[in-house]
Image (cartoon, rainbow, N blue to C red; front, side):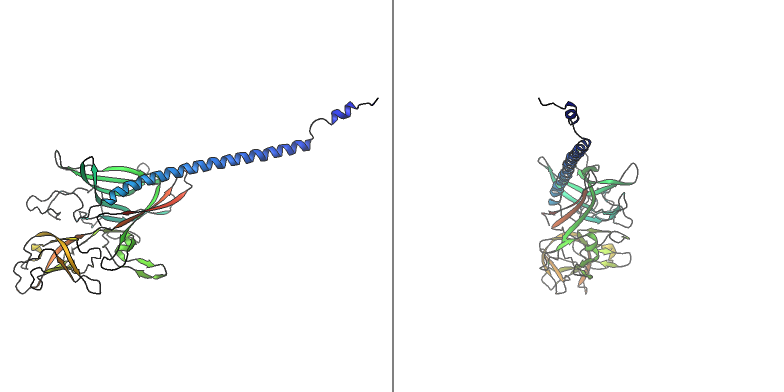
Length: 403
């Protein structure tokens, strides 16, 4: 009979210490892998959700912009006003004491005109909460909208609210806002209060550019910032020392720092206290009874046949000089004549430019305003999601139907 060593068998039952250590190490590795995969999945879901929320906000904001910019109004009397009762002409007259709407919609700068005549782009910057410099552009314009069967004209401003009203410090996440105002004719005519709407909470920078082109050339045009349009500061990428383009607009921001500018979408006369800096000239013509007009210095690159120019005389500034037979007139451009230099030589209108007796004079000086619109506007937004770790740049081009 074979004997059984029970003591030896009992000693071999169970796991050794080495086996237990190996098993625990494998368990730790497996558990760590599972936790890591779960954490990564959770991060991806969270990050994706945050990005989707950002894109939804931006898409909604862009849809509002598309509706507003598509119906932008071409005008040289953009802000609302109550016409003079003593000498009404349908246009705003500086110094006539006319009430102005929109004063709370725009930027108050020393030396600026008290009235904004046309679509305006302001280029600027701000320093963020961490010291970074971000684009901070604003756009101010007039548009048409409908409420039911009623059409309404609105003043609209797109801008970044970058300062925390409580702390006075820059916001970690500025807010893209839309401010609107309108004229309410009934029951008592009045300007509505300015209404602010939050469009997007994730915008840390906004750059706005206008598509500009010389309508008298074959150039397809390009997008310009306000500074590039007013200072001719576009540099050739192939040769950074070469400045491209021309001054399409006048910078109306007094004492602007480098990288800051403000431009209007219209051409106009300009007169200092002592002399004309820009004026319009009316010539009695070549005996055909029509006469012609030209700006003294402006190239008016964005004006062409079919556009309108508002011409008006200022008798008290030209005592004893010949005058137009009328004070104010909106004239439709029939033909633009220009030499190879690109400066306008003559503009003919659909109706005569009649003058009073001119004697030996052949020309008279007039004031003018000529509105235009950029055919397209490009808005570039710099975005950061709610987690603060994903930065994106999104751009969209908006077409202006009335340009």
